[in-house]
Amino acid sequence: MEGWEPAVVERDTSRDLTNRLRRIEGQVRGLARMVEQDAYCIDILTQVAAATRALQGVGLTLLDDHMHHCLADAARTGGTVQDSKIKEASDAIARLVRS
Image (cartoon, rainbow, N blue to C red; front, side, top):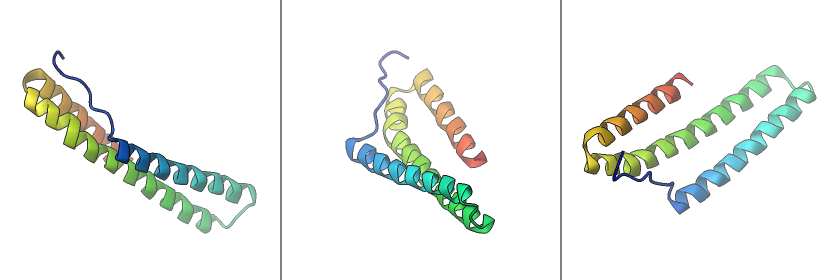
């Protein structure tokens, strides 16, 4: 794919995502403690759902960033680069929807 360079996550977005992932990491550690301490199953499931939603939020932010930068750049380039990046994004969306 000549003439095309992959875009990186914007610095502000990267910082935000890093902070969000650190919070999620803390949530997951908390889940492990809950399991170790034999917490009530419904309470654990509630926290699993919260962590899952938080990860989905990270995924959606990354997807939005990808569409605004990588897909926009590929659309300007056109041709096989555009086709490849659209397929790549479609596949990523399918994975997010299935998760």
